Amino acid sequence: MAYVVTEPCIDVKDGDCTDVCPVDCIYEGGRIFYIHPEECVNCGLCLSVCPVDAIIWDEEATPAQSAFIAINRDFFDTSVSGLGSPGGWDKRLSTATDHPAVAQYKKSAPSHS
Image: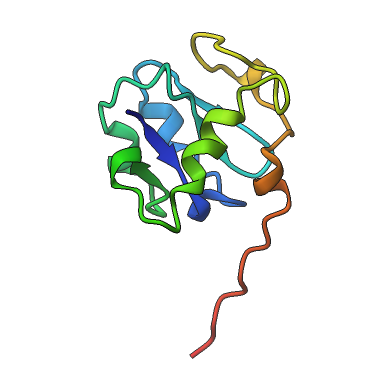
């Protein structure tokens, strides 16, 4: 069980979540932040400060959000970023790499009413 960063973070990357995380389990990719599922201690601080409501608890993911559980987990694999389990994020671990699903993601244009 861990928190998960989802679609609203893509191309926003506010970063408040990284400032409050007590274990530095939120890592910066090119278009989105990723939460390391093995390092997350489920404190919920990131959830409370995210200005775009992009962070969810994995067990409460809607069907539309559920793909981001694997996206966050797989980001750390050798086939994506190769970060593995570094034990805490700092700026030197930031990367322009994203999970392929995020790299290819096309955000909808905002609707004008």
